[in-house]
Image 1 (cartoon, one colour):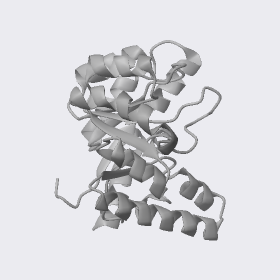
Image 2 (cartoon, helix red, strand yellow):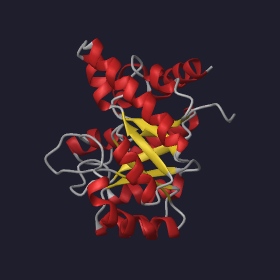
Image 3 (tube, one colour):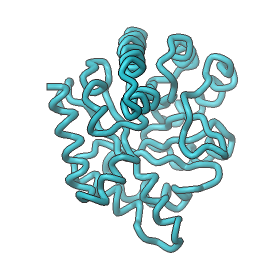
Image 4 (cartoon, one colour):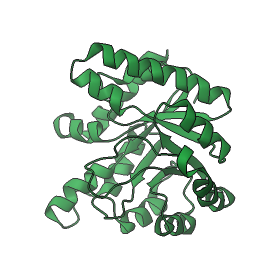
Length: 248
């Protein structure tokens, strides 16, 4: 991979959502992960939620066994999740906000108000060799706090931008895009590696992919949905094509 090429992390959570809607073992998230890997994914993302609504502990066990690309383990900042991460020692750990009542992750983590707590929480993960990422809004205060606590990576929440595009709110979409652009550059200037994700689709990915500071996009729900119509491999291939085109 060239220095300029974006990495694509494929989130397989919602393969597990479909499986859990019926019970049983099908569709298998591990099979989806291996297909994504074969299709060109540079990593696999999975979020083990407190309520286990999609990914299960057994899924994480299986992913650690079968993947040859890195696993990005998304988790809340809880003792239970820290213990699981320290047992598995995945390549990357992304700390995300989590509320039991939410349908999906709503907004970025509040780092500035919880700086001391989060600094102590991530220290053992870093000591174990995990790359620690913090999922945050495009907000300078949060980025500065993530940098101070010792995170190596930030992942910028692109949901507000994607929602504005989907709703046809052009001015709002442009404002969100500009904030993402400015904060990508700001985070990079601090020495942080910059990732982005949440809500990205074929229609919204290219402006984000064009930011030179962004090194990785994590995309899940849209790709799993698109796979229903065109198959997972072609869905990922098209996303990769759009990313490379924007970067090229």
